[in-house]
Amino acid sequence: MARCRLCGSEAEHYLPYARLWICSRCFVERFFPNRIRRTVEAYKMLEGSEKVAVAVSGGKDSAALLHSLKEAFPTLRLIAIHLNLGIQGYSEEAQRSVEELCRSLNVELEVYDLKAEEGFTIGDFKATRYGRKLCAVCGVVKRRRLAKIAGRLGVDALATGHNLDDTVESLLAAFTGGDFQQLVRLKPVLPAQPPFPKKIKPFHRTPEREALLYAEILGLPFNRRRCPHVSGSRSLRGKSLLDLWEAEEPGFKYRLLAAFERLIPLLEPSVAQPEYTYCRVCGLPSSQPLCADCKRIEALKRVLNRGQN
Ligand code: SF4
Ligand code: ZN
Image 1 (spheres, rainbow, N blue to C red):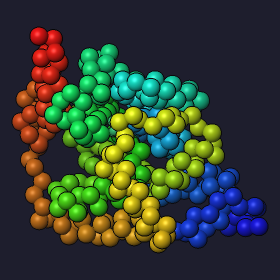
Image 2 (image 1 turned 135 degrees about the vertical axis):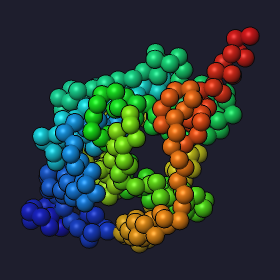
Image 3 (image 1 turned 30 degrees about the vertical axis):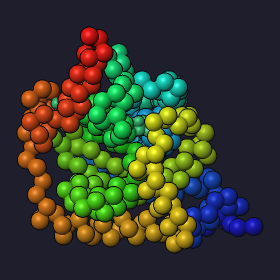
Image 4 (image 1 turned 45 degrees about the vertical axis):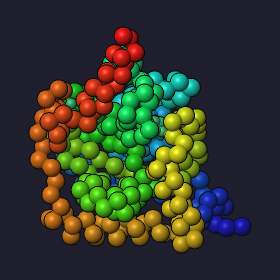
């Protein structure tokens, strides 16, 4: 019987990259929150922050993020933000899970219902020229609204549940696609762009399967349904390939992250970042005169108007 390296009791989990046997209790009470604390401190994520918004999708990552931030930083004031994307058979369950989670943690919750607020859902974009890459549209829609709501709430930072697997996959995709502008933007802390607050990724060094393990051991409510639009997404394929590599070579994802973190400061001075201006439609910070969000909404409106004629 394997013993937990931290307390000596029976171990239930093995983390190959660390060659560590650990029991459930030490994993949720010590190992997991300690890594978040160290990540937050290493990247100075919460410096000068008292009030932090946490984007909660209803999935395992954000459930684990909200819970572990509360554990690791008990004096921090947290506000959860949930976007209901109006995806049938998925969004209802996601919102229910978030409401249950926030109730149990006694965390204030702000819900933004896309259909009720703006009259469209993510699925409506299928009819536009962006419809073949629905996850990319969804990413823009979510990013923009989360930042906007967080700005309105006057928080010092917006935390998202992007984990190690998300980051390494995005870094690799940007690198192999030669998109160095995007590569140098994939940092765990992005400075504020008023009215948008600073963005932070406390799970930068947390593997996805450990966020799931944390949520499962603690029985956190989260949405187990898969979004019907996820199949075929590029990031999912990339993550599966990285999982194969990790299984062959434990620690591979961490090594890749470390290599990129050494590369980015070298690349940064030679990669010009776009000048920020303000979108002529919504008035919010944008690298283009018409922001990516407004551009997609205009395309959607054109399709919807055609349907009404
Ligand atoms: Fe949005 Fe794609 Fe995630 Fe579905 S799978 S919620 S469409 S990003
Ligand atoms: Zn805009």
